[in-house]
Length: 447
Image (spheres, rainbow, N blue to C red):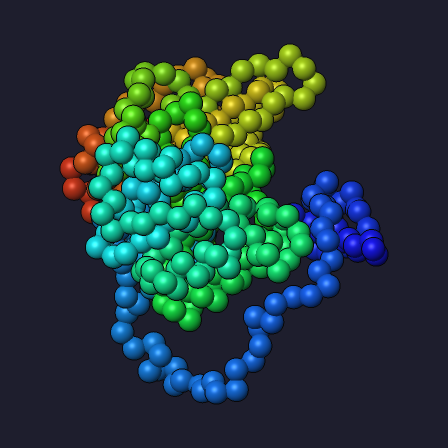
């Protein structure tokens, strides 16, 4: 018997090499190559059909995409209003974070036929979980199978509107010799599911695990194949979970959904601003409140900074929920433009509540929180700070300023520090607003 040929595939980007490499030349990651069997035959699923005809673009785009609403508002918001017929949605997250619970709750109450394909549990175990969560899955059928050909035969027989595959790492095609979970099996299985969804109009929801770096297991090409990529994240020690869209062909990628994990499953958090500020202590240095925009939703959150003297040569810079490189830039601006000497101090920054913020509108709050902690002087508890900080120390205007102010006012804040360039577009309402042009002016105004 001839020995099977092998190849080495990067599990991060799908790059193939005839020999093992320590560092991937495509994505630059280390130790990501896995050995796989070179397939001598492949199913001809890409055969060209000769009876295809082109369709006028304007006719194809007339009307809105029909959607199926799950009834879970936070889930529908991230999807862009519901799941689109014929779309493929990939949901990733750490093991045990609640991915299966999320899809079970979201799709159990819709008035369409749903097929839940589980490769990690038996149908009995899935039913026991549904009873524990008090889910009335009247329109949901379950199938415990990992062979993709067998799954598709059942799908064609049952004709469901939505198919849930949990998880894609357990599914395999028997016309390939590689084991389930390898790059080849994950990529080819997803391609077949994508082809079925587009030809039949059935929506497919794929659940996937993530690596220790937080990347969905399997090559990056998976994210290019599917229509929507959702990331379900959060710490197991905390009860709150965040659903974030990393890619969405049918909606906004900046939307987030917030859930609370309880004994009876996931519960929607419809007012996240109250959650992020619920444990805030007043009159503590290093605490400043700001307002961020996540998609179309304003979120008021607390920025926490802790600045301590460093007893070593290199002071520490740690950021949680904020870009580390952006923090380094703001520290340089604080020292150069505002004469606040923090270069010999450790700086720890945290976005309270576990939210990750990447918009520049929180820059001014970060700078003032660092200055507050360094001077050990608390800011007013009813103050909200919004603004982008440039390299020259100038405070730049931000978008959606009225939405941010209205959310802060609704939560009882009385004073706001805003960029001067937003003065013409601000409706003051009941807030006292102070406009600033530079970072030193903002520090003087707050302290």
